[in-house]
Image (cartoon, rainbow, N blue to C red; front, side, top):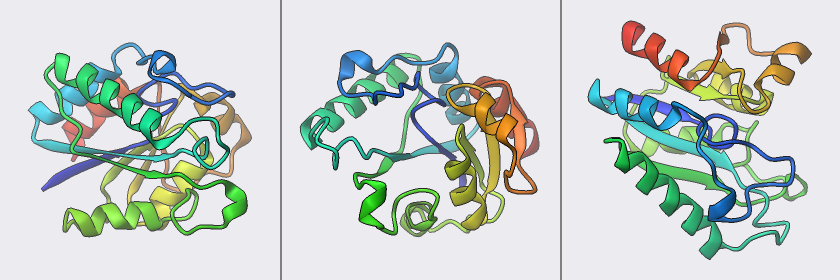
Length: 179
């Protein structure tokens, strides 16, 4: 099975320092939904792995998070794509859970769920914690310059084998050619 793991905020949709707290605030980045559909058309299953500490912070509840994800699923479907599953961590950093990126448990759980060896599975994020979680799970970390990506790139310290792309569509073109 061909699998791709994507972070959500800053990769698929516009990010916000104030969190995405409602379906109305979830706005796709131009070309990202079509990029997911293109992955599907080339036989890739797409899974989202996202930290959602806004739940623990009381900024939104699970009903709202599910509504945001429903909007994302419908938007991807409208362009002929499909997201296989969404894995999320609802905890705050202070909770010291094992599922919050940069820890790799959420990513490892994806591998177990889909019975996939994560070695070199393409995984796209915009923040250092995404790249660290992906690399620690054995994935091929890919940074996009959308969302927090430009700041992440400027700060450095990324995993050694991180690939850098302008946006998700750029990363997807590489994935289709190389994986």
